[in-house]
Image 1: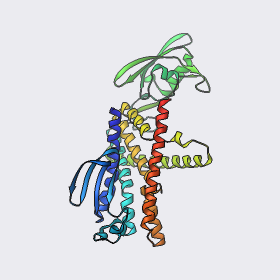
Image 2: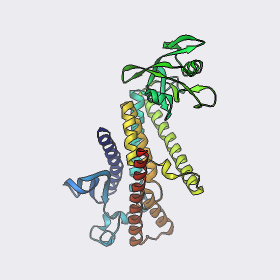
Image 3: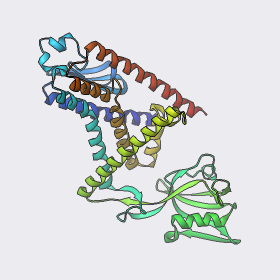
Length: 370
């Protein structure tokens, strides 16, 4: 239950940031904003200040800004207050309002990444000489592996390993610990039982484990990935630069991944549902991140914020990208798309997105069941 509440809180923050972008730019442009709502109706609470109703709604998975004329009707096109309608603004203003939500999500991710680097963020000592207090950390555990059977979990930091080499007991600890020395110790130990002492949540835990053959192509293994992880903490002005680089790299990675997914789906080379995670799956990921620590949770929130921004730019009706596409078409043709066509396209797109979300959620639940 705690993880679910945390997920809803993160989603509410990200949606608030996104809709705040639309809201502020629309207000700044003189466009009438009728409602700013968190969640979807039915409405639980609302208060009207000026011309805008601020509301909290019962369904927590989303939010909205009701901008006058964004879904145009006769009143918005030629009514009494039509000059303040979104549909009657110039194309640049419309595009600015539409792209503002995505921009705010990216700026928020930049802020979160910069904050992480200012307070200290776990990072690989192999990548940056600014990393301090590095130690060998288990970054992932292979399913159905000896490590998983032994109770080893991602985020465990290795403090000591007791193993057998040439019939003699050997202890590896302190400064002698490195990714290479731990891997060599596992190989030297063979399939005999070894003792791994790890730091977890500030406590030391000793776990017996037996490496097995067949996990890697040569020799034995426990089924873990290791890295030399320490703390990367930098001055604020450096953190701002690091945060920008992190956002840039994440945007590139997401675009490449989405492109590969799209091409693979067209070619029939992969099942899209196996590669996509919906709300149920994200709840599990939020739980994993929170167990590793609040810094990991901030990092995860920043990543989700960037995903939300990129997906919203996809040129599909009902998404910001779809509405931007309509604005672009109108700018090129210098003709307004008939409001009935635009409204129907966005409504159909919205229901298609709901259907896809339902299918992905069922897929998430099925993965949890087996």
